[in-house]
Length: 526
Image (cartoon, rainbow, N blue to C red; front, side):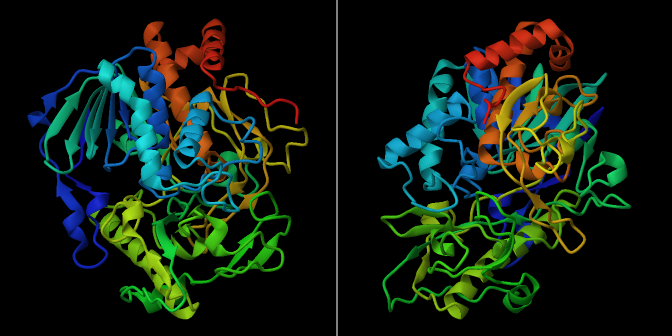
């Protein structure tokens, strides 16, 4: 069965003002597509997709990587969140070898352990520096012919036969050219889980009910597919000298979003490493450190201290009006446009109503004309109905009383972060709670039915709740790396990915290979 799109949103064309339909592109008939051979197709060149490409290509397989923007790296580059969301042990444990290589190369560029000296992370940097590091990590595989990268390309059609993806068609967003792939294995590492509806894979959108997941913080009565974590257009600013004025033009809908958001430096937090040991509402200032806080908003995600350059990713510029997972391309473009106005409105509010006209928007940092990230920071995607779905009780410290979270015999990696849900609206849970250091089960990467599809990003088998702790940089990287390694292992052993999990001997060999390649499968005693 073939499923295809009539049109797509080109996220890089969405205007701040004017007609949002300019970002909606018609799709060519898939029949006109030219063929390109590959063994493993990775849709999505974000954080998980890059890690998947590295893992699959280093095993010697022919890999194609598709990315809809012109920057590889996803949340750490094109989405602008280049102050990494990590955990307190990351300097010594809790990431893969290739993730540490990425971090080390970033530090070598600046000759500084933390160029931003910010208080939310141990490593912040400029997005385009990470783009360069990623390109250099991938380059040997490109030069060898094992890896082909298509930037500015988006999947628009897929054919499935007997629960197997037999063909995927992608379209160039700049030239409209269509390319047809007939891979043996497909990894969906797109930011929104774009391939799932195209290939007919069963998936979940939004918040489930207690009856569905058994989670105490799930929806009490009915599932709410519109309850998808808010997304954010990030932006970077430089603090100029006192007396300078760099106030932007007042964005459209400013008065509406000023009160609807509302724009504020007061946020509700849960005690933990990120914000400190206080639970409840905390009052921040732009520059000053208030009681009970670790610093001001300016140093929260500062990217480069010596340039006084910071990045804004704050509840005040989260867009929560509607989800873009379950709507038409035109409606998605309208939502993206409003999300841009929300972020620019937050900047305007800081400049005019918080007394900071000296902060100057830096479009060069995000590589865009409007100064906003090329792609919004996506916290929640479509999620596969997986062979294993991770639930709140398996990771929350409220239920896990030992040093670590629930143990999974099919572990393919580790992670740690609080359950942190940026609510989508008044009927979302907006949960936040501490977790124990957790594992990534292989079953969460495996769809219930489609035999040659692997989830490789935020689309794994989590719930609306547990997605809140599995969506962060090192975890998504680990998920992608495990997906790429699994694809390579499955091809070499001529078995479907799910069979690797079901065969104890094969699973043991695969896990041993992951460990040899620098992927930790369990936490040491803490």
